[in-house]
Image 1: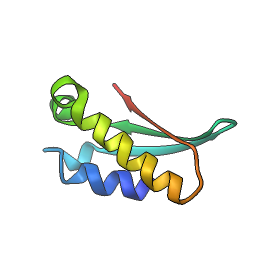
Image 2: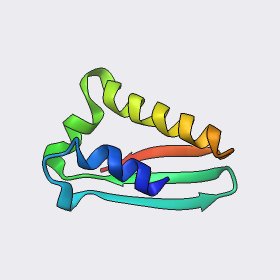
Image 3: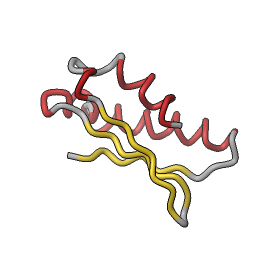
Length: 76
């Protein structure tokens, strides 16, 4: 899932070298942590949170196909 999220975000951000995507396995499922450059935070969140919502939805669809529970968190 990490590679999929990186694939989506590297094309969206202005500072791809500062992009960090980490996976953490928990009892509830997989948690994907996203860290981006401060200047890219607005681009990743989007107006009214629409971009991050779309990223989360795409991850949920891919996770459902793989029979996984995945949460996406944007870390500051």
